[in-house]
Amino acid sequence: MESVVNPKAYPLADAQLTMGILDIIQQAANYKQLKKGANEATKTLNRGISEFVVMAADTEPLEILLHLPLLAEDKNVPYVFVPSKQALGRACGVTRPVIACSVTSNEGSQLKLQIQGLKDSIEKLLI
Amino acid sequence: MANLADSFLADLDELSDNEGYPEEDNAEAAGRDDDEDDDMPDLESLNYDDLDSVSKLQKTQRYNDIMQKVENALQKGTDFSNQGSILEEDPEYQLIVDCNALSVDIENEIIIIHNFIRDKYRLKFPELESLVHHPIDYARVVKKIGNEMDLTLVDLEGLLPSAIIMVVSVTASTTSGKPLSEDNLEKTTEACDRALTLDASKKKVLDFVESRMGYIAPNLSAIVGSAVASKLMGTAGGLGALAKMPACNVQLLGAKRKNLAGFSTATSQFRVGYLEQTEVFQSTPPPLRTRACRLIAAKSTLAARIDSIRGDPTGKAGRNLLEEIRKKIEKWQEPPPAKLPKPLPVPDSEPKKKRGGRRLRKMKERYAQTDMMKLANRMQFGIPEESSLGDGLGEGYGMLGQAGSGKLRVSAGQSKLAAKVAKKFKEKSYGSSGATSGLTSSLAFTPVQGIELSNPQVQGNLLGGGTQSTYFSETGTFSKIRRTQ
Image 1 (cartoon, rainbow over the protein chains, first blue to last red):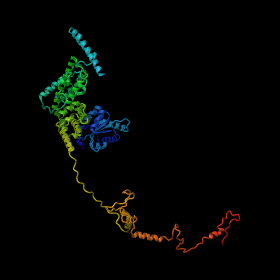
Image 2 (image 1 turned 135 degrees about the vertical axis):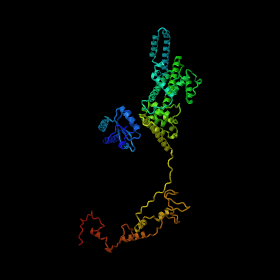
Image 3 (image 1 turned 30 degrees about the horizontal axis):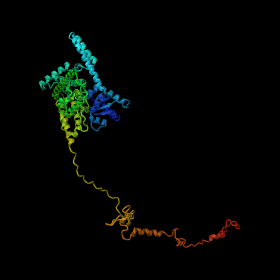
Image 4 (image 1 turned 30 degrees about the vertical axis):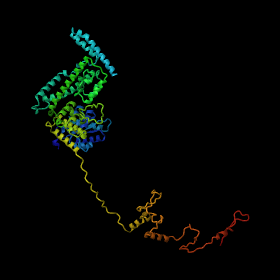
């Protein structure tokens, strides 16, 4: 499974970082700070309320969400790929696979420190 | 108020025009002074009197270069000899990208000219701009009407729908506008001509883009067709911008404000944009078109995203998405499955907890229905029953009292249980109760003591003559009861 990952899915998180990302996404879903789906993630990037964007690397075809890295680069928002869309859907609390989601900003949220730490970890992948 | 302001503006125009005449005589002597003097009235009036000051696109080098290239490309026809090369380095792709940008600029330019025409023509026909919304239609109508005051002499057939032609004619007969001056009319006509020329150029550009759409966006063209794909790209501002749109915005691209001309909105058609013109949408039954439009918008967005990064140049992904759309729409049109006859439920097969026996039979006999209630529950045929309130009201008596005796009392049959109960009750009662009549004696027999007699007169002698009052007698002393022993 790892050997057939699309090379366009960059930066791809390793197993440990993936676990941390999915954990934060699940907590963000509980705190209503999560937007699920490629279209809603696009809207959060256009509105400038996105903290970071998570995408699934096993999307078929992957091109249907490769516009999100371009938008994220324009808005200076970190983005990362995780290996499995099924796992991403489960973390979002959805029974269907989710190929893209976005954690939104909320001043005064209890998740702010964890989100900031995760953003730093994601940005290190791009160095 | 607006008409008054328009009158002031017209007066300003007339003053500017009057001032222009003497200066022209002097202008023949000095050319430069003439140019400088011509600028002054424009600045003073601030009315955009000159079309060239607001419409500059046709004078630009970029516009002429692109139009020339489009002419050459259209004449050359479709040759994809460079299909194998890198896309971004192909000069024709760059031309298409420039055409997309140019079509947006042409659209903006047409809007600017439309504002110019409206400002000029508002003096003559203020209501026309609220009846005809489309800029190109407005320009055609203005060019056709010109300075004519009687609209029955103007033939607007082919320019507008019949309902709007009728509304325009009726409104023109009551308009508060006045004929334009010759100079204003000439400027307005020139602006209309320029708008129509720009519209023709835009059509040419879109035709070129449409002919190349199978090369630029193969997947999007597979779903919605080349014409709609070029319109979507033109409105969105390019393929990259279209890919960055959420699907719900793509659904509304090209949606126009519908002019109902006073008719009700209850029966108006479903408002969609360019996606309404796709072949899949038109072949969908009307009740399912709302869902079909949403589905086509979502899949078109996915196809545009694939095309924007050249994911699949052959268009196979687009054809797969189109097949999914068709299958879903066919699935919606299937009737629900027929109702099968429902079998009876499985009977309850649990064993009973009670079986019968002596105790149960006696319990049933104890709680059985009495003979009186049985008669009350029965009705004899042809004979009305009596009731507690008469005339069928209250509680019915059934066959009670119908036996001929006229009494409601029924002599009950002797059941074994009742007889046994009575027998047991009789054995226990051995004494009489206190409430007896005067005819019976108080003689009682007990199994223990037998007969015992007592004399009620004994108590009276102890008090010393019970017939006298002993308390307040003058001769009497305190009573003392002596011991009998």
